Image (cartoon, rainbow, N blue to C red; front, side):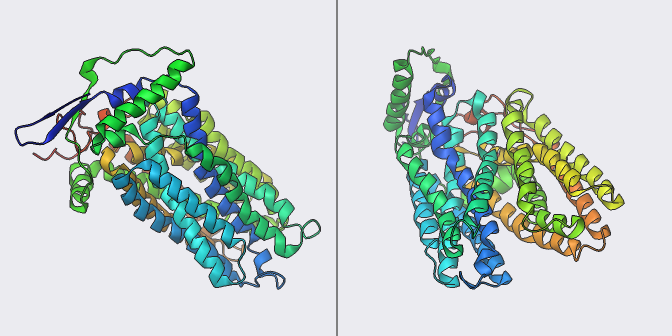
Length: 499
């Protein structure tokens, strides 16, 4: 690393930090990143499933005696907390660093979720469900940023997609736990649901110690005026790898990045970058996040109603249909993730969105014809979301890697908030209305065709506006705002670079 000043007296730094991070082999350090940071999605899936499972129990007079509206409000307030947490901590993580925030947000979640299990009234439960949501929402911004900046470029796609997909592992844990915890013959009805709220904090406590060993992102340090700390951090990472008997190749000087370090980015600059300089990428991120969120929330929050109203599946049996549905969602990102790094981002996004759209349309035809059973419809969902889950995970990957480093956390938070509000509010309400009392399959069939069309549109938009980011360093995809010598190329449909 070398540092000089330009003609305006600004500090100019030439750094090999990004190139050194991207040339690292896969080691125990990277597994630590995955386990220590990736647990966030497991916790979120666990939380959503536990809350959806305890709804009927909390209406019992022996517990909190909530109404159906109260139960729905409990889910909505958690979602609102996620949106607030993403927006607040997305801004903060870009200003103060990734590490401080992913330690703080996990702590917020641990405390709030645990206290929620001690609730004695609705208002108390809602307050701490909201705070727990704030913690998880903040995790999304800080964690996606940290993973992208710490994982070598050639592995970044598969790792990000697989980690996002582990949400469904958490959901499966939550579903399995609810079968045991909510059985009154095994555990008192007013204790089982409370224990459920403590599962996430117990997992988090086991992980928070590991997070203490995860360093601050050297890329963030480099662009925010902490060049020496960035170099020392990479030195420590490389030293640990060499101690394992691995050899590291030298990085040629021509791969150095030249930047003007600065502390933060104003909202005015963020607006200019996202709506002017990278308006095509903003349209891409918005389209991908909203389309996948619409499909997911439309199906996930109403699949129990479909099974019950159209196939006569009892409430006590619906949980058994959830596991293959969740297994398909988990398997897709794990098995298809590597292809996003080898076949390519645009091709795989178009393929996963497109295939899931076609399969959903086929299932709509069969559903309307009355040829599906509860089992065969679930099989369709399993296969549809095998592809859709990989596509949905790639949406988070896309918005986290196509914007400048200095506002990466905020970019993730904005698109996450939009997708949650649109998909989390509009889609379940719409599809719930289409299901009605289960006497007419026509309205829901139309809804399935609408969902298929929306997903197909998301895939087509990704094909034309997508960025070929596979195998490229983050700085080759998008120049940092602090770059003194821009080097990343323009992409299709991108606006002109301001002078």
